[in-house]
View 1: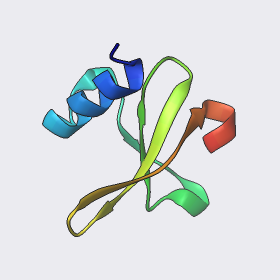
View 2 (view 1 turned 45 degrees about the horizontal axis):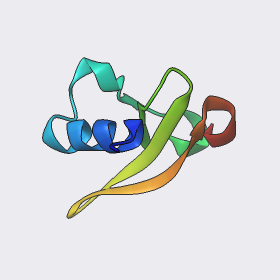
View 3 (view 1 turned 120 degrees about the vertical axis):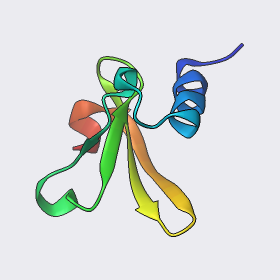
Length: 65
């Protein structure tokens, strides 16, 4: 069974600008990172690196921000 995370991760890999992901730059101390949505409340925090992206954290909005 494919999970929502796996589905969104595949979408992110194929088209990180897809509006369904609600990708956005973070602000404040984490402003060098970005986030995209898995569900209404679940986010993935990531950082762009030379070779691509590094997934940093996943959790609810309150957990990761």
